[in-house]
Image 1 (spheres, each protein chain N blue to C red):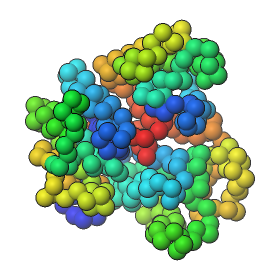
Image 2 (image 1 turned 180 degrees about the vertical axis):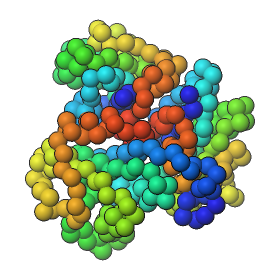
Image 3 (image 1 turned 60 degrees about the vertical axis):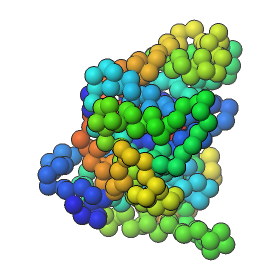
Image 4 (image 1 turned 90 degrees about the vertical axis):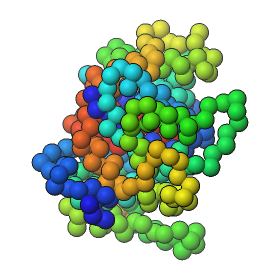
Length: 119
Length: 99
Length: 135
């Protein structure tokens, strides 16, 4: 299966980003493909370079980066949602790219399954 | 269709709204705070018991255990892990997340 | 790639495939951003010639009531956009009767033409979709 993963919430405040990550990781371990992980609404905050969570808990941004690097994932942050929330190239974590909502729609068309993680 | 519910039935009406839209041939998966709907002896659990006559109901085990609810899960509700979540998403043609 | 398709080269990547997309709206406007930002997805989706439906359930029905005057809260009134959807060939707007009744609303309260359906009919509609997005 080819999955599109839609992440609607930011790191830590809601469990959505965690569940999305665990689902994505499990899907990859099962041999499925991830067409795209698309970050929308506050989900764009998963891509901030400036995160500094406490050392004794998971680093959500880094976790996405590592998963993306290991599996060549396409992590896309919605430009409109990002601009609203102050996420730009200059503070974007490596491994993420900012692009348009069309990327979400296109992924919905191309993937076999679209799964939404939100509040 | 695979229906997921991620909010507690006591916090939000998503669980109830989901139940009102589940058709035969579908399945329900409770995740995150949604797992609280599957705790035995509760009003939401009674609704699930009715549903389970025709619809399989699953609950995400890591979320149950994180919340210390493992001894309270309603009989007949099947526990799955994230791999099981992926299997369900692949098995059913679409996934609808009731947020 | 064009601005209107949000960065997608239409001919190469998506031509030919038509899927049934359902956008599920269950939240009231203004209290959270989901109503506005989900509408933004719908507008972009219009460029992709897919079979698009919008469902308004629970508090989502409040998104399309008439008379939204937002000057006092100094937030953009985006309700006119629902009226503009028709111009984008997005005409399948479904509103759940039970949600309307519970809130004392009728078609006359709505700013756009919709099809009012029962929860059972809405369930049938949902089952027939290829892609369901929730916000």
